[in-house]
Length: 90
Image (tube, rainbow, N blue to C red; front, side, top):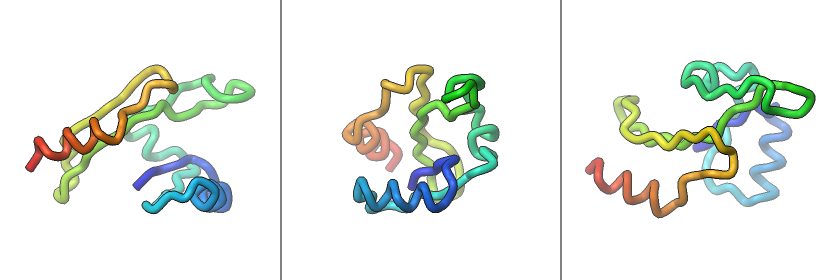
């Protein structure tokens, strides 16, 4: 799943446009962003706070087992990196 701070309508349109096959959840109050310390104050348009990109693998008990967090929005984990990380957790 993915989480966005965009309103539900915007997220729904994005998911349809790019063909997401997984749930795109909405967090318009940025509660998850703040809980995981992912905020980038002043990083967005007009100085708004945005979320830094991050990927998490969370097991069925809710324990975070792997994290990819970066300060650079251009750096993202690749699918094969996440699959390899998931395979080591078995």
